[in-house]
Length: 225
Image (cartoon, rainbow, N blue to C red; front, top):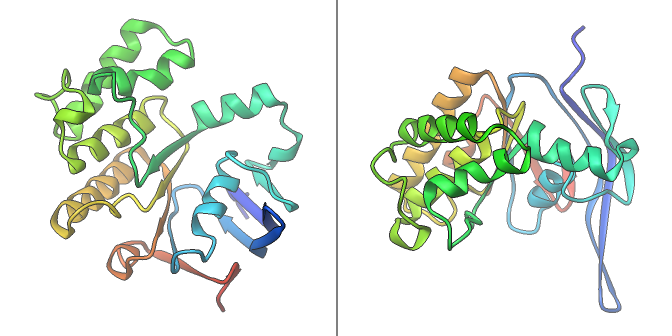
């Protein structure tokens, strides 16, 4: 049996806000195979974003373990964890998180520059990706000059610049109208087919979740049976 790309076991996460503790994940187990397209569905506050942040190495659980290609993330040094986030995982967020002072091209190149890849290679790949996501004529535009859908396309290209194994998308259509959101989902699915990446998307939208072959529902910090 093939080893899963990612396995999470017994994940718990509690945030302390002032004098109050908020238990977001209460013991989550999930396995994600290479090439999977998985949707995490659930209402706001169900723990979808928290789970994505944990498996992407952006946060650490209070209990449980996360294995990526058989290795425990908790055993990674800070430097290796930074490299993992930069090179093995791509992130797409609802709020885009583009650098406002940078052009689309510069935003897409940024993770490649952080990885210390050759400038010519990064620039060529960024141009290719921006063309692929339909922004070949908008490379020199800053985020303020782009629509929400165009900004999300830049964010997707940026997430792909280092050819990640795992792409994590947190409510990528949440700030978009239904038509533009549908275009973004079609783009993600076509990119997934072309690159053989693994895609995990968190969404509260039933229609978006239905596009994934595999759906997991989170309810109050637990996976619903």
